[in-house]
Length: 333
Image 1 (cartoon, rainbow, N blue to C red):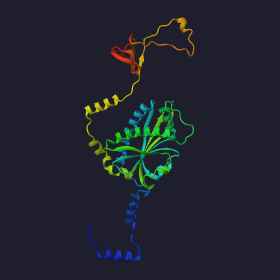
Image 2 (cartoon, rainbow, N blue to C red; image 1 turned 60 degrees about the vertical axis):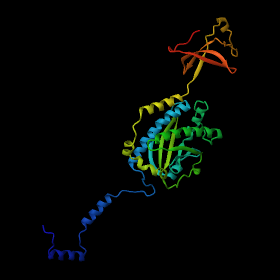
Image 3 (cartoon, one colour; image 1 turned 90 degrees about the horizontal axis):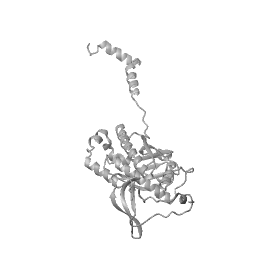
Image 4 (cartoon, rainbow, N blue to C red; image 1 turned 30 degrees about the vertical axis):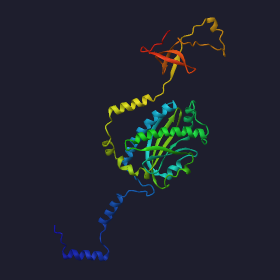
């Protein structure tokens, strides 16, 4: 069909325009189509980080949660569970508004990145941790209160151990020096960036014994912006170096060498008559043998490992290891 209009068609179009009878169906359809493609956008909370980068952060902090569970369980000598809950974007002001008062806010840096970040642990979890460090059963505090100076020192030590695991988790992205700067209990004193600036909030469920709560990690976008390109999934896995088996073995050996074990010296059995045993009462003193030729068994972690001989060193009672116990049995003299 010819695309050239005839004179009659031109006159008909001009007449329709003059009378205002031009059809507008096609224009309205295009306009409706454009409106269907429009998505709502909140300029106060822009999504500054891509979904792929968020998934990378989820994998990274999932590894961090497993590492923290292991290290803090060993430090507190109690079962501690940490599980990643979510990774989301929000404004820094919204995060500060959600923090309880008083709370436990560890302000830290990740040099060479500029600025700081916040590690928030629910105060209902902090007091059971302090109780465990001091040798208690890990009971929760009925009333949340301000920390004493001694408690602040103990909590700072716990936070530093958590940040060691965080630095290890982020080592897959780059080399960072994660260091605790301050410990605050009032969120008003933690103004790391503008309240309207975007931040990444990583939330964990943390359980100490029978007490559960939330641990949060707030990372301002301005601090993470230089390393965002490294958080792309393909680049992250593609650039990951192959682990050297010898290096892994050395690292495991180093951790094992730093592990603390309980060592106990078991003396020879003491033989007493039954009639003397029946006369024992609370407060009686039982004299134990201690002479130069006394044979002793050394138990490591509750397992007999070495044979020894009692003695003295610098006016203190000591044990000299004489032989290993390969069979793992007690030594009878």
